[in-house]
Length: 585
Image (cartoon, rainbow, N blue to C red; front, top):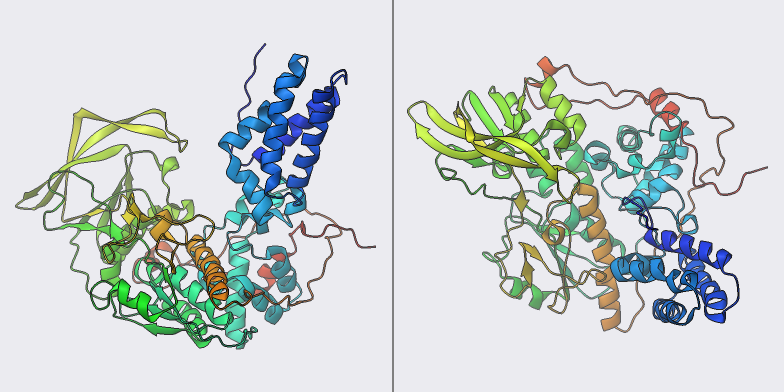
């Protein structure tokens, strides 16, 4: 007999292996000791790991036990019982290590390690049910203070975060996921409106100095948490103002600059020094920074557009999407003309298209797959189409020529082939089917990469910095890196999480050097009411008000106005309070 089990990334491989060992332990006839006692011992170890009680040496013991049971058992049951454990240890060992070292189950399956699925899915592990409960009760000061414990960018994330927490919200099983991102935005906006100031405890001052290269979300978050730990970090930023891709990659109609400026100002007031218009590698070498500071964190982001590698992409009028958005923010963008083509399907492509609409152009997004496969946020795609942006699917760029009337872009029509590892069907250009379109400006927005030309001492692979995945340390002592510079382009919340984690790793490194103890985060009690709702009433998620498309494209005013107080509190009341483990009498 044979069988196949298909699993997705919502499956915990450790829990799956435990399930099979549990089954074979129960099925063992007990005749031979290796199977009868060995599977039982393996199950005990798996139970410890899945409940957060595992230790590093358990993995070697588990592997030795598994091989012993397989070799010494009398029948096929015992001989094959260890296979799920051995194969998951071989191919998914990192999941075991995460359970043991971080006491965390990535898919959120091992409930002893999960407070609530939304918390587990958030890279910052924000206490989502906690601040939803506080907002529902109108306790806005406590709500915003709780948010700031793990995220110094509530107003930003409330607007631009793709909210992975909502994807796992158990409310989906009843009606729709809670609108967690907009509640975070409401809490931040309400605090701003009422003049609520957040005061967080800081550790005593330390003599050691830390530097951060890059003033984007990752660098600012690292600086913020290092300041709370008692250091006085210095951020070096090459552009005139802090914010990185938040300012120079996300247009103002999605992220108003007064919101961004307020949250950056809060970070600076925590004790962070910033030096702008300083390009590391030009104005100051990385080696000089390392001499002046005890530890350095590199968080330069991915600001450089990836080449399309087609003839004519270096012609005047062909521009990179990321560079154009930066020029718009710096008020240095050249005219784009009346006809604009944007090649790509990600958020940068959509942002460029919507920006050009606001500059008066007729815009077409050209994408090699179909709309359903576009990596851009679906809501942003819908808004772009509503604003008059056209979308041409299943076309891939072939070449660009300069003509008397502009740029002639040749496109191969594509067919969809087999599925790739990302779960999308591969586009196959048909070189016998070519269409040509004329544009005044063509934008390439097919990907971005970090500019790492400032140092030759770093280990670079595939345009990113190599680091220890646990400590974020490079192979240069005292030099750490994280965010897009390590992972490639990712979400804003991932960059913030990398900055927060890097601050902790730098603190451990510096504490060891001074023979001291690492920083321990204070356990503040915000008085969250631990109570499940009395009943669950089916009710969908409310829509947030938006400007009409004709009004939007006249300028860069924020498109969405957010929830009012009544709507926000009603939405919070839909929370099932998965964090409450005991029913209150």
